[in-house]
Image 1: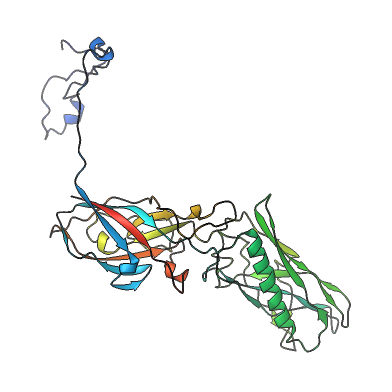
Image 2: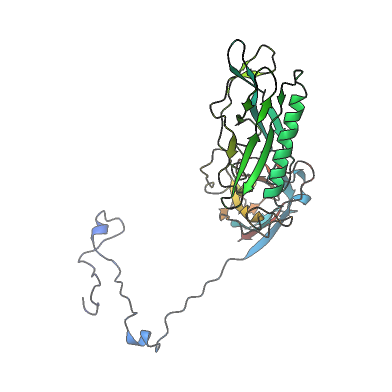
Length: 367
């Protein structure tokens, strides 16, 4: 075929209609040849074809949980005043989120046990304390303040427990939490308890217990310690001590790298906006429900490795899908619902149990 440059495939003889079962073997139906090797193009004598595109018209929907018809700050319904006609696509543009506590009601409690007494009759046994409960104060912590909080709460719990002991046979242990800025890790150690009763000895072992409080299970982004499964001890005859050492008992515990944050991201959900979407976003987590319309990065709440600053996240640029909202009525209903959840699937109302600041965001809706 004349006029076709080198390397361009010619159309083979014959025809290949749209219903021809052999049409894919008929060669190239349209001849393609680049013109970028032509002198008039490369020298700028002839301009390339110019293409102009125009984005579809759009409007902005501003949503503020303060303006909710009902619900809570992070699980609410709003009235957008009227239906919106002829809209086709929606995406979240910006979000303003209060900075989240790193010690929250979801990760502020844990239990521990420690060696409490040595018994010589009838045999040498380790008698242990009952599980000791610790509750940390909810708030924003840096490395220094969380060390002080953990040390104070653990020692107060030990003192309260020892006050119930009528024998007074040991000097209570002291717990110390420290931070190593070189490795970005925390360490909780026990200064040994000293027995002054029948057998003089040093009691050095203790361990953290995984419970529903979440310091070990939902504190993985803040101060991650190994998961220690609960240990069933045999109560002693006095009903106060326990017999036997936990397999994970040790003198001190060191955390892995400390992230100093509770949740790394927040997800925004809406049932109403997914009613006519083609599909839902998916996650690898079994905790987070579907119908996600945006994901916000929250690790920017730290101004350095350990410290918070300010009250709000900056206007976040969320990762937000482009969702189809075209329905048979060709209108977006004015009543919309929204839920904001952490990476464990819990509503953020659980993090701000008292008087939370509102959650605001705006959406771009195109026609």
